[in-house]
Image (cartoon, rainbow, N blue to C red):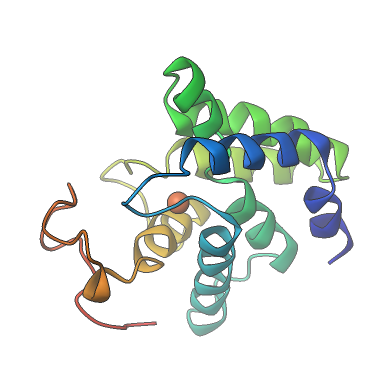
Length: 161
Ligand SMILES: [Fe+2]
């Protein structure tokens, strides 16, 4: 996955990840680190395989690695992370060799991963990101379970994927 490896060594990507790590140093709720992004990537890829969705593996991993990088802007300037993230992601994806069409699909998924519109199909890339993001959290063993703002039905009570 040559283009995904380029993301990992991209300056903007690394600056964002360092900024998020610092901002979340004392955070007790879920973190937005590489472990989270990779869990999202792998769950999304399993969904892709199990449901025969046909998305490109590199696009799935790139989308997952970049979906929360906007949190650095949210922590610094209060800009919603899904909005800031899609702008940052576009720049990084371009530098790493993704096509205009791939950049459009990935950034659309990132900008809507916080809240999906009701007409989103379960076979769309944005649905895969939204779902994998939620499924990546081990709520069933979380010490902050009661304090978490997620609705009860959104919390993962068990392992499903
Ligand atoms: Fe996330």
